[in-house]
Image (tube, rainbow, N blue to C red; front, side, top):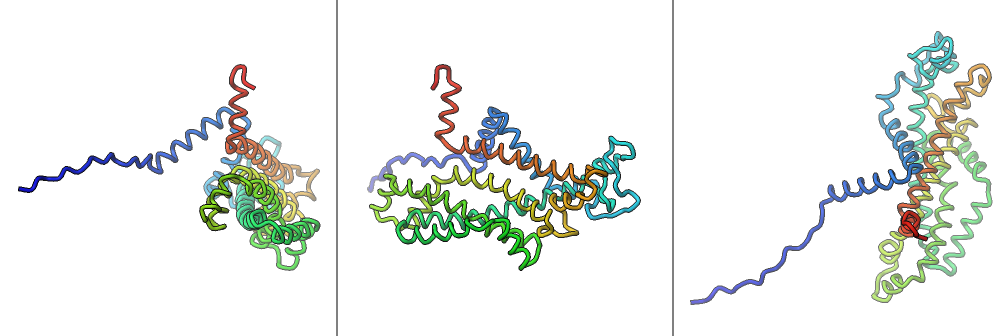
Length: 319
């Protein structure tokens, strides 16, 4: 009679925590890091509030931002004589609610800022990766193209593009993307030149990895921290650029809403109705400040060396 063959016991393979558990763990870690850095927490709250207001604008805004009423034109904020709680921040020369226009203007700033960062960042990163990895003539040709475009005034190029194509949200994204990819290319190219001599890159090339795998699998993840910081800083710059173009009349066009467009509408009433310019301008300033504070905090938590330095300063007797 055949004896049953005993199978060796194989220990179960550790799969690790699920994606939901990893996400929750990451959120808790970010919350702890933000609570330790109050300045970074302020920037996170400002940017988070901007995202919430932009997404929930139809629910948060008390009025239609394009609704006009000459009976309520140039109404001051509610705490001044003649103001009303129905229009907390007052109305403009056409009777439109300032608060509603500021809320819906955040949508425009968020859409254009994120779109330009994604388009310009992707294109500039690819150019910088290829130039830094290949080197030689490829690097020289690509960097001379970057230097040539940088030598032209960025605002003038954007104005020419918008004047030829026409002003709209899509053309503003195209113009600012053409004007902003060079900074990503320069940063990534400089970092790639230093990473090119790393031991893990040489080891990947020795075992036969293709250039595409070396670039995107081994080198690009090490650029996440500086690219994240640069992208957030560029987001703040794009908000200012879009506001400037809209103020000059080459950006967002009526009946759409934009902070720069509202400032342009209120410049003729600056001394008679200061709230037309003050509140859109404050929205731009607070948003740019919050984005810069968030970028400084993310630069620290995304860089292991910076986290080690901060931990060492918090230890008694640490350098």
